[in-house]
Image (cartoon, rainbow, N blue to C red):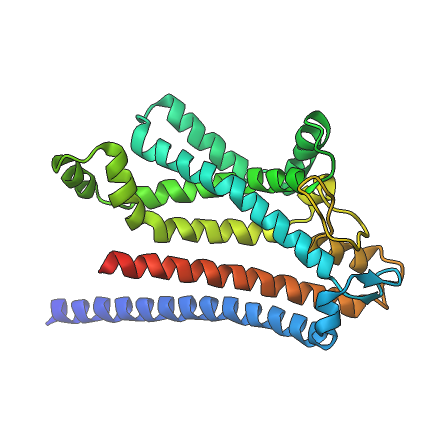
Length: 294
Protein backbone atom coordinates (compact mmCIF):
# COMPACT_ATOMS: atom_id res chain seq x y z
CA UNK A 1 0.00 0.00 0.00
CA UNK A 2 2.82 2.35 0.92
CA UNK A 3 4.60 2.03 -2.47
CA UNK A 4 1.33 2.77 -4.25
CA UNK A 5 0.80 5.89 -2.13
CA UNK A 6 4.36 6.99 -2.85
CA UNK A 7 3.84 6.53 -6.60
CA UNK A 8 0.60 8.54 -6.46
CA UNK A 9 2.37 11.27 -4.48
CA UNK A 10 5.23 11.41 -7.01
CA UNK A 11 2.72 11.47 -9.88
CA UNK A 12 0.77 14.31 -8.24
CA UNK A 13 3.95 16.35 -7.78
CA UNK A 14 4.91 15.81 -11.42
CA UNK A 15 1.48 16.88 -12.61
CA UNK A 16 1.58 19.93 -10.34
CA UNK A 17 5.08 20.85 -11.59
CA UNK A 18 3.97 20.43 -15.19
CA UNK A 19 0.88 22.55 -14.60
CA UNK A 20 2.94 25.33 -12.99
CA UNK A 21 5.43 25.20 -15.89
CA UNK A 22 2.65 25.46 -18.47
CA UNK A 23 1.11 28.40 -16.59
CA UNK A 24 4.48 30.19 -16.55
CA UNK A 25 5.07 29.49 -20.25
CA UNK A 26 1.61 30.76 -21.12
CA UNK A 27 2.04 33.84 -18.92
CA UNK A 28 5.37 34.84 -20.49
CA UNK A 29 4.09 34.18 -24.00
CA UNK A 30 1.00 36.30 -23.43
CA UNK A 31 3.14 38.99 -21.77
CA UNK A 32 5.29 39.27 -24.90
CA UNK A 33 2.19 39.57 -27.07
CA UNK A 34 0.70 42.14 -24.68
CA UNK A 35 3.88 44.25 -24.78
CA UNK A 36 3.89 44.12 -28.58
CA UNK A 37 0.26 45.22 -28.78
CA UNK A 38 0.88 47.95 -26.19
CA UNK A 39 3.70 49.38 -28.30
CA UNK A 40 1.63 49.17 -31.47
CA UNK A 41 -1.37 50.76 -29.76
CA UNK A 42 0.77 53.62 -28.46
CA UNK A 43 2.31 54.31 -31.89
CA UNK A 44 -1.00 53.98 -33.74
CA UNK A 45 -2.85 56.17 -31.24
CA UNK A 46 -0.31 58.99 -31.52
CA UNK A 47 0.56 58.62 -35.18
CA UNK A 48 -2.66 57.80 -37.02
CA UNK A 49 -3.88 61.40 -36.83
CA UNK A 50 -1.14 62.71 -39.15
CA UNK A 51 -1.38 59.91 -41.73
CA UNK A 52 -2.94 61.23 -44.92
CA UNK A 53 -2.10 61.41 -48.61
CA UNK A 54 -0.08 64.62 -48.25
CA UNK A 55 1.98 63.09 -45.44
CA UNK A 56 2.81 60.06 -47.60
CA UNK A 57 3.35 61.87 -50.90
CA UNK A 58 5.05 65.19 -50.10
CA UNK A 59 8.47 66.29 -48.90
CA UNK A 60 9.02 67.83 -45.43
CA UNK A 61 8.37 71.56 -45.18
CA UNK A 62 8.90 74.42 -42.72
CA UNK A 63 11.84 72.91 -40.90
CA UNK A 64 10.25 69.43 -41.00
CA UNK A 65 7.34 70.55 -38.83
CA UNK A 66 4.87 70.01 -41.67
CA UNK A 67 4.65 68.41 -45.10
CA UNK A 68 5.34 64.74 -45.60
CA UNK A 69 7.94 61.99 -45.60
CA UNK A 70 7.86 60.69 -49.18
CA UNK A 71 11.61 61.18 -49.83
CA UNK A 72 12.37 59.28 -46.61
CA UNK A 73 10.09 56.41 -47.65
CA UNK A 74 11.80 56.15 -51.03
CA UNK A 75 15.25 56.34 -49.43
CA UNK A 76 14.42 53.61 -46.92
CA UNK A 77 13.17 51.27 -49.64
CA UNK A 78 16.29 51.96 -51.74
CA UNK A 79 18.59 51.14 -48.82
CA UNK A 80 16.70 48.00 -47.81
CA UNK A 81 16.48 46.66 -51.37
CA UNK A 82 20.14 47.52 -52.00
CA UNK A 83 21.28 45.72 -48.86
CA UNK A 84 19.19 42.66 -49.79
CA UNK A 85 20.68 42.53 -53.29
CA UNK A 86 24.13 42.44 -51.71
CA UNK A 87 23.67 40.24 -48.64
CA UNK A 88 21.18 37.61 -49.87
CA UNK A 89 23.20 36.07 -52.74
CA UNK A 90 26.52 36.21 -50.90
CA UNK A 91 25.06 34.99 -47.60
CA UNK A 92 23.11 32.11 -49.15
CA UNK A 93 26.06 30.97 -51.28
CA UNK A 94 28.39 31.19 -48.28
CA UNK A 95 25.99 29.09 -46.19
CA UNK A 96 25.75 26.52 -49.00
CA UNK A 97 29.53 26.30 -49.26
CA UNK A 98 30.07 25.92 -45.52
CA UNK A 99 27.46 23.18 -45.14
CA UNK A 100 27.60 21.31 -48.44
CA UNK A 101 31.15 21.65 -49.77
CA UNK A 102 33.60 22.59 -47.03
CA UNK A 103 35.02 19.82 -44.87
CA UNK A 104 34.75 20.24 -41.12
CA UNK A 105 38.04 21.44 -39.75
CA UNK A 106 39.78 24.25 -37.93
CA UNK A 107 39.27 26.71 -40.78
CA UNK A 108 35.50 26.18 -40.97
CA UNK A 109 35.22 26.28 -37.17
CA UNK A 110 37.14 29.55 -37.17
CA UNK A 111 34.88 31.00 -39.87
CA UNK A 112 31.78 30.01 -37.90
CA UNK A 113 33.15 31.60 -34.73
CA UNK A 114 34.01 34.81 -36.57
CA UNK A 115 30.57 34.87 -38.22
CA UNK A 116 28.87 34.53 -34.85
CA UNK A 117 31.09 37.25 -33.37
CA UNK A 118 30.40 39.52 -36.33
CA UNK A 119 26.67 39.26 -35.76
CA UNK A 120 27.17 40.72 -32.28
CA UNK A 121 29.16 43.77 -33.39
CA UNK A 122 27.27 47.03 -32.61
CA UNK A 123 25.72 48.69 -35.62
CA UNK A 124 27.63 51.92 -35.02
CA UNK A 125 30.87 50.01 -35.61
CA UNK A 126 29.54 48.86 -38.99
CA UNK A 127 28.71 52.48 -39.72
CA UNK A 128 32.25 53.63 -38.97
CA UNK A 129 33.69 50.79 -41.05
CA UNK A 130 31.36 51.60 -43.94
CA UNK A 131 32.35 55.25 -43.80
CA UNK A 132 36.05 54.35 -43.84
CA UNK A 133 35.81 51.76 -46.63
CA UNK A 134 32.94 52.71 -48.91
CA UNK A 135 32.62 56.46 -48.36
CA UNK A 136 36.29 57.45 -48.08
CA UNK A 137 38.56 54.69 -49.43
CA UNK A 138 36.44 53.60 -52.40
CA UNK A 139 35.21 57.14 -52.98
CA UNK A 140 31.47 56.41 -53.08
CA UNK A 141 30.76 59.32 -50.76
CA UNK A 142 27.54 59.49 -48.74
CA UNK A 143 25.32 57.55 -51.11
CA UNK A 144 22.76 54.80 -51.53
CA UNK A 145 25.42 52.28 -52.57
CA UNK A 146 27.62 53.03 -49.54
CA UNK A 147 24.68 52.73 -47.15
CA UNK A 148 23.35 49.59 -48.85
CA UNK A 149 26.73 47.84 -48.72
CA UNK A 150 27.15 48.75 -45.06
CA UNK A 151 23.69 47.44 -44.16
CA UNK A 152 24.37 44.35 -46.28
CA UNK A 153 27.58 43.64 -44.35
CA UNK A 154 25.67 44.02 -41.10
CA UNK A 155 22.99 41.50 -42.10
CA UNK A 156 25.40 39.07 -43.78
CA UNK A 157 26.24 36.98 -40.65
CA UNK A 158 22.55 36.39 -39.94
CA UNK A 159 21.88 35.27 -43.52
CA UNK A 160 24.88 32.92 -43.51
CA UNK A 161 24.02 31.28 -40.19
CA UNK A 162 20.32 30.83 -40.93
CA UNK A 163 21.11 29.39 -44.38
CA UNK A 164 23.60 26.95 -42.89
CA UNK A 165 21.19 25.85 -40.16
CA UNK A 166 18.38 25.44 -42.70
CA UNK A 167 20.58 23.17 -44.83
CA UNK A 168 21.66 21.18 -41.78
CA UNK A 169 18.01 20.39 -41.01
CA UNK A 170 17.67 18.43 -44.28
CA UNK A 171 18.29 14.72 -43.69
CA UNK A 172 21.34 13.28 -45.46
CA UNK A 173 19.21 10.51 -46.97
CA UNK A 174 17.88 13.01 -49.52
CA UNK A 175 21.42 13.85 -50.61
CA UNK A 176 22.44 10.20 -50.76
CA UNK A 177 19.32 9.25 -52.72
CA UNK A 178 19.85 12.00 -55.26
CA UNK A 179 23.53 11.15 -55.73
CA UNK A 180 22.66 7.45 -56.05
CA UNK A 181 20.33 8.28 -58.94
CA UNK A 182 23.21 9.87 -60.81
CA UNK A 183 22.73 13.54 -59.99
CA UNK A 184 25.78 15.68 -59.40
CA UNK A 185 26.33 17.45 -56.10
CA UNK A 186 25.38 20.78 -57.67
CA UNK A 187 22.17 19.30 -59.11
CA UNK A 188 21.37 17.76 -55.74
CA UNK A 189 21.78 21.08 -53.98
CA UNK A 190 19.87 23.07 -56.60
CA UNK A 191 16.96 20.69 -57.22
CA UNK A 192 16.60 18.79 -53.94
CA UNK A 193 18.21 20.46 -50.95
CA UNK A 194 17.58 24.15 -51.65
CA UNK A 195 13.84 23.80 -52.39
CA UNK A 196 13.38 21.90 -49.12
CA UNK A 197 15.45 24.35 -47.07
CA UNK A 198 14.11 27.50 -48.70
CA UNK A 199 11.24 28.16 -46.23
CA UNK A 200 13.71 28.22 -43.32
CA UNK A 201 16.19 30.27 -45.32
CA UNK A 202 13.48 32.85 -46.00
CA UNK A 203 12.89 33.07 -42.23
CA UNK A 204 16.47 34.28 -41.86
CA UNK A 205 16.01 36.72 -44.70
CA UNK A 206 12.91 38.13 -42.99
CA UNK A 207 14.89 38.69 -39.79
CA UNK A 208 17.67 40.44 -41.69
CA UNK A 209 15.18 42.74 -43.45
CA UNK A 210 13.63 43.67 -40.12
CA UNK A 211 17.03 44.49 -38.69
CA UNK A 212 18.40 46.68 -41.48
CA UNK A 213 15.17 48.59 -42.10
CA UNK A 214 15.25 50.22 -38.68
CA UNK A 215 18.97 50.90 -38.30
CA UNK A 216 20.11 54.49 -37.88
CA UNK A 217 23.82 54.43 -36.99
CA UNK A 218 25.14 52.69 -40.16
CA UNK A 219 23.29 54.97 -42.56
CA UNK A 220 24.08 58.05 -40.46
CA UNK A 221 27.75 57.71 -41.48
CA UNK A 222 27.26 56.47 -45.03
CA UNK A 223 24.05 57.51 -46.79
CA UNK A 224 21.54 59.88 -45.27
CA UNK A 225 21.05 63.63 -45.25
CA UNK A 226 19.31 65.82 -42.68
CA UNK A 227 17.01 67.41 -45.23
CA UNK A 228 16.85 66.39 -48.88
CA UNK A 229 13.43 66.95 -50.45
CA UNK A 230 14.35 65.75 -53.95
CA UNK A 231 14.36 62.06 -54.87
CA UNK A 232 17.60 60.24 -55.71
CA UNK A 233 18.46 59.77 -59.37
CA UNK A 234 21.35 57.30 -59.02
CA UNK A 235 22.91 54.94 -56.49
CA UNK A 236 25.58 57.56 -55.77
CA UNK A 237 23.08 60.10 -54.42
CA UNK A 238 22.37 60.84 -50.79
CA UNK A 239 18.90 60.08 -49.48
CA UNK A 240 16.61 60.68 -46.58
CA UNK A 241 15.57 57.61 -44.59
CA UNK A 242 12.78 56.98 -42.12
CA UNK A 243 14.93 55.84 -39.13
CA UNK A 244 17.22 58.86 -39.35
CA UNK A 245 14.34 61.22 -40.10
CA UNK A 246 12.56 59.92 -37.01
CA UNK A 247 15.69 60.44 -34.93
CA UNK A 248 16.19 63.99 -36.20
CA UNK A 249 12.65 65.29 -35.68
CA UNK A 250 12.46 63.60 -32.26
CA UNK A 251 15.75 64.93 -30.85
CA UNK A 252 17.20 67.83 -32.78
CA UNK A 253 14.53 69.28 -35.07
CA UNK A 254 13.81 72.98 -35.38
CA UNK A 255 10.69 72.61 -33.25
CA UNK A 256 10.49 69.25 -31.52
CA UNK A 257 7.07 69.77 -30.00
CA UNK A 258 5.56 70.92 -33.30
CA UNK A 259 6.98 67.90 -35.09
CA UNK A 260 6.00 65.38 -32.40
CA UNK A 261 2.99 64.16 -34.38
CA UNK A 262 5.15 63.73 -37.48
CA UNK A 263 7.58 61.64 -35.43
CA UNK A 264 4.84 59.23 -34.38
CA UNK A 265 3.49 59.16 -37.93
CA UNK A 266 6.96 58.37 -39.27
CA UNK A 267 7.34 55.54 -36.76
CA UNK A 268 3.96 54.15 -37.79
CA UNK A 269 4.87 54.24 -41.48
CA UNK A 270 8.21 52.52 -40.76
CA UNK A 271 6.43 49.76 -38.83
CA UNK A 272 3.93 49.39 -41.66
CA UNK A 273 6.71 49.08 -44.28
CA UNK A 274 8.47 46.40 -42.23
CA UNK A 275 5.15 44.61 -41.82
CA UNK A 276 4.49 44.68 -45.57
CA UNK A 277 7.99 43.35 -46.35
CA UNK A 278 7.54 40.58 -43.78
CA UNK A 279 4.11 39.65 -45.17
CA UNK A 280 5.54 39.41 -48.69
CA UNK A 281 8.40 37.23 -47.45
CA UNK A 282 5.98 35.05 -45.48
CA UNK A 283 3.81 34.58 -48.56
CA UNK A 284 6.88 33.45 -50.51
CA UNK A 285 7.85 31.09 -47.68
CA UNK A 286 4.33 29.64 -47.55
CA UNK A 287 4.42 29.13 -51.31
CA UNK A 288 7.59 27.05 -51.13
CA UNK A 289 6.38 25.21 -48.02
CA UNK A 290 3.17 24.17 -49.78
CA UNK A 291 5.17 23.27 -52.87
CA UNK A 292 7.38 20.91 -50.86
CA UNK A 293 4.32 19.15 -49.45
CA UNK A 294 3.01 18.26 -52.91
